[in-house]
Length: 337
Image (cartoon, rainbow, N blue to C red; front, side):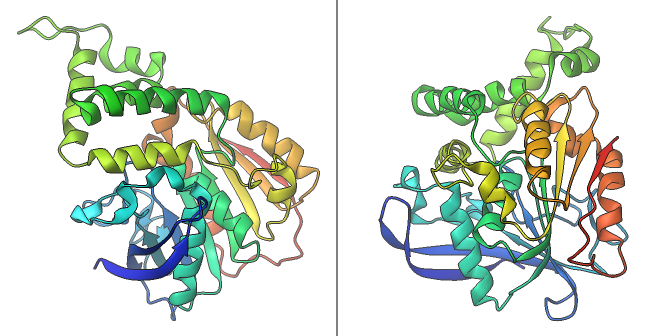
């Protein structure tokens, strides 16, 4: 059931004060009965993370890696993502907000829900970046921080792609459709498309199958995602910065008390694996309880949604632990699938 919290008089990064309406869902056990896992959604995702229509149902559910019969799962909607037609005032001044503001909104919502400790924060893509932001904002909040196919900063490459997306969203006659077509080209890889289509053409109109696939994804998103929501989420991608403007990402990340489990994708063209590996190597010199796990796939960024067997294998040791890890355990691991 979709519920809502009102964050009154929230002051964003630009100094604007307004009321924020944050919608959310609980799954599985009650928050007073079991360890709580906060799940952050990706750009076009939402709080419906499990069940028959859940976007991460292969990872979260009964007898899944994140077993809702053992855990309480909480999922917030990023305000303005438009889930179930929810309208709010984010749309008019969305460029005043940074991803750090969303983390602060989540932190205040957790306080209102009387949640002071999380077993884990997990998210993919921008959801993983939001996990970084919240963990830095509240270093003692979570025992485990699991950013998947993401980063703790907006790289020049990421900003460049988002700038193109922004241009399409503000200038195209069919903005959501066209922006999604462009996005699919960096969510996947040339090898992934070659394997999927093999240069085949449609027998009726002789169009390449890859063209029909792009048109399908554009139309599909246009029918379920609003233009203001897309503009907001695309903008937030350009504001990822756990250093809060200082540029000292490592110092910020090293303040996180919980175990950090970075999951990267070797072929990711959006959040590059090289960036994740560099972050791991440098951060491991400052923080012992950190690990990195690499999904090996030809499918690029979307592999975190496609390669569920690998992802489950990496995460099962975390979520099937009978007792929480000792806080003094500073072991360091490197896993690759």
